Length: 365
Image 1: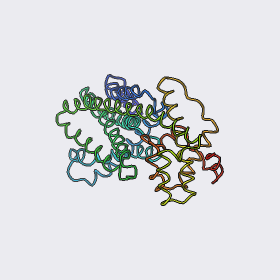
Image 2: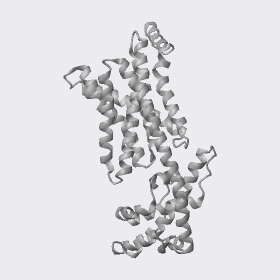
Image 3: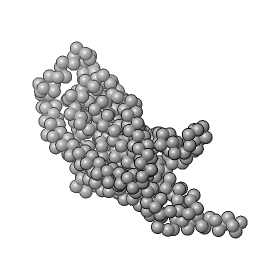
Image 4: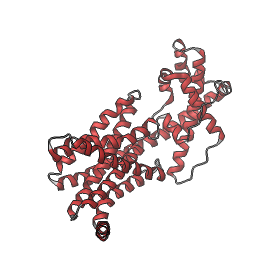
């Protein structure tokens, strides 16, 4: 009994040395920098902590899956760490990102990078602490490699997965699940490449501490410039569109002329739904832009009013009534550089669908 207590205390003492901050602080510092760079505060602090926790759960799952698969792998640990475990671990880490993207909780490169890096951070923190605890004589050099190399690699690889998936879906909105395959392969290859470079640890650490942060800064700046461009250019265009609706002249505008050309493909009821959808899209998009502007300037957000909730519910209903083909036909009119479904999520839209035809004619007046 005394021996077991002494052993536990000895294990605990390992975490009270310089090894622990070196193993965990670098990746946390980089995550904090990414959050600081996000001037629109797209990822809430509570969501960030949740993603870190999910990454820790992925570490536990990876431990058991790796142990199970390794029993059937005949080529030794080095080959396993280079060619098998990267694919297992990146698959487990990417599951949370896939869920977020499928439910439109990630819509931009900025929040994709932060969410992906947060999941990778959680994975790396638990993994590094585990390896620190099981070593009888922990070496400071090992913790430097793990803290400045392995940890940042885990965050960077998962962030690369999220960034690639979002970029593919922006270019090919109908790609669906297939958008995740190249993203997954990229993350696994990055992970595998790092494990290959561990034969020369300084090169691996330099790659993670210099190249990855620089790439993320460039991506952040590009994505934020694009988001600001959407906010600035879209504001005037949507105001003009809503003014045309209010004056009853929308069908005389170029957008209205385009909608007239769809009469041969869709019946009158669907075209009426399309008109409602275009107007609601513009109204909600303006509100989403307002929220982002308030976040950037440091103002708090206004509470969601009942009218916004009603409009979100109606938009969801109209999307179902119009169908996928109809929404694709409307895409040129929506100026949707930012996914409307992500905008709806930003506004808090998760309400139930309202009854059919309840306010359709009212919106056309």
